[in-house]
Image 1 (cartoon, rainbow, N blue to C red):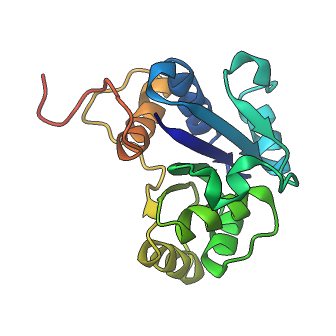
Image 2 (image 1 turned 60 degrees about the horizontal axis):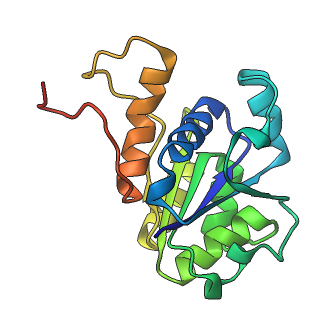
Length: 186
């Protein structure tokens, strides 16, 4: 069984986080626990882009960004995967620098030091040289970069379909069962 941390930081792209949460909630047999930490800007963007955030709709445990007593703040809790989606450039930069100033960056630091899977979904454009260097540094440390760049060969017909082209790749990389359109399939 899988233990997953979902970080939702303050970048635009709350639809990606919402779709990940929707899909995870519909595959409860694929994981043991999902814990969520959301930055205050992540919450603001969710409310701007989607509407009210109602955590009671999800079978997950939610933690305040200042709660360093959360189980996933320690490597001994053995969480195997962390997804940060969307990942702001501020969060990405703090992770690249090893700055653990909140629960989200502490969890990312723990995942990296334990050599587990850290999947980051940056949603920013254009990218500065600082952004690119931070992405390289994190990739060299073992993180997986999945920029929120949708694909269109699946002929998406809704915003959810477009977002799912990114979300399904993230869930694939996390090792979760995903039923999605794939390149070359009919």
